Amino acid sequence: MKKILFAASEGVPFIKTGGLADVVGSLPKCIDKQYFDVRVIMPKYACMKQEVKDKMEYITHFYMDYNWKDVYVGVLGANVDGIQYYFIDNEFYFNGFKPYGDNALFEIEKYAFFSKALLSALPLIDFRPDLIHCHDWQTGLVPVYLKERFQGSDFFRGIKSVITIHNLKFQGKWDPKTVQSITGLPEYYFTPDKLEAYDDANLLKGGIVFADAVTTVSDTYAEEIKTGFYGEGLDGLLRARSGDLRGIVNGIDYEDFNPETDPYIVKQYNAVNFRKEKVKNKRALQEQLGLTVDDKKMMIGIVSRLTDQKGFDLIAHMMDELCQDDIQLVVLGTGEEQYENMFRHFDWKYSDKVSANIYYSEELSHKIYASCDAFLMPSLFEPCGLSQLMALRYGTVPIVRETGGLKDTVEPYNQYESTGTGFSFTNYNAHEMLATIRYAEQIYYDKKREWNKIIDRAMAADFSWNVSARKYQEMYDWLIG
Image (tube, rainbow, N blue to C red; front, side):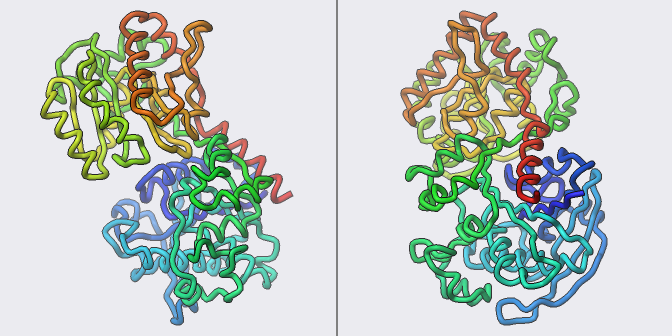
């Protein structure tokens, strides 16, 4: 039995701010229990809901030398859906109203503490992993500490590490002197071949340098990050490690996202009866949001963080033109003020066509996936993207830019061969995006049978975790031997 420990800053069902939590919550459940014992370790945040805290039981506590002090480390455990979870407890570090704060230096101190504490806790919880699977910069120091501090003892000797990059933009950077003082790492770790990058100490870089393998969340993103445009300053390092770098596309939980059983939607449906049943969700949503109730009107959905990364500057350029078309646009999400206000403005200006919902609601997101005809994601970059996978699952045709995971998961419609599961455009260009939306409109209005065949293929695509889990298992076998 090979033992794997997932180390991450968030995970469903305990705490979630983004797609990382979905991965950490879903992937361990799909790894083959016959061959692998997979467990998860994460911080115990004060802001976790009481009902999940109630599942945790005290295991042990100890004091650890950290940042020139003796620091308390509590360890709790919980078993959910057959997966053993561990939680590192320290009120000073994990006490905020949300998991991540705005003070960059404190975030570095907090997750460096988490990285050292989780390694220190392993001998006490009687679990020696063969491999620690780290996620994003928050656990970037785990491979570093593993090689620097812990390799000397028999317990830790030979433990392998993998780091998965979910979004290269976030790296955990601060000046080397301060980071050295906090982490207690020797000075020679803060050189350009180790943790230092462009005069900063960089925690993600440390993880990439010292991990035994590096993965990211789609094949295309794995290639893109080796280039200057997408590499966020680490493209040279990623080219150097390209032999150990692989892309494995994320999945989604096919039980949580299932139009046949979804409790949030008005009318459940499947790949056989969607032609009759799906539209009932659309009607209900049009009523709920105060849009013109019309089965035939093409409805486009957006569920997203409202940021530059997601391509909202392209949408802002084209909103007035797009609103001249015979469409409806339903938006759900929060983010940068300029985009929140832009959508509020168009909701006011075209109240029968645009519905701006500037908040987040799990229920409304499911209703949008189930009700809309198309789903728009014109991202500047997208390591994997989960929304397009949910849209495919619900038979809502994605319109995407060909980048990262969007390129790997949405096959562009080809009218001559009658293939494809969505529509896509190549360049980051507002007019190209609008032309693609209008091409989709044309198929929707003038070639309804073709449109329904696109939905058939979309709903038949398999982006459940089972496919990706097999690829992770191959990697674990390759590393552990």
